[in-house]
Picture 1 (cartoon, rainbow, N blue to C red):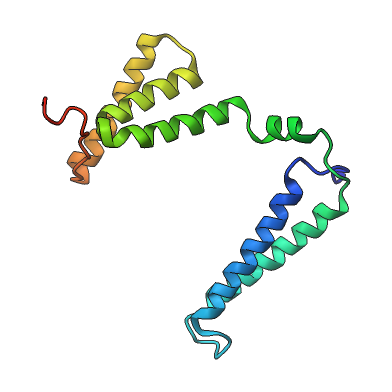
Picture 2 (cartoon, rainbow, N blue to C red):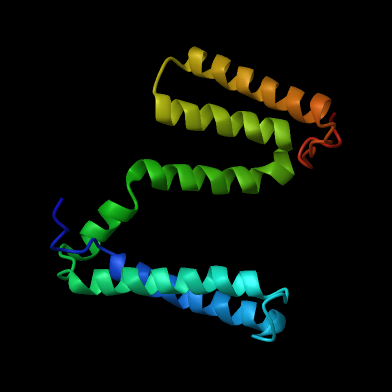
Length: 160
């Protein structure tokens, strides 16, 4: 299989960020105990982050050998942020924002219904049944099996 002649949009920036993050992790691992001995607590974190930095450097060298990405911002947005992914990320943020107000069950049920309907695009009644079944399974597993108290929302606290 021949290597790609052109890098993808954002690939160079990601490779640089990956190397920078790896080097930062290595410096943090070094702060644990330095190079004072092979049995010190920082040895394995330094080995792991050092391997990550070496791999990141190899990736960066490979990316630099490719031709520049074409297409500009429009291609970058099309490749990196497709509509389905963008909508799902927005739904996750909306779910996180709604949970303190609606509570776990209502926010999760709403999130499941909207995301399943968006991704599956089937009959609304079938989507509601699948969402309710999933929510019931989640509720049983967390409340009965793991005995976790699920958060209640503040929106209906005085009414219920």
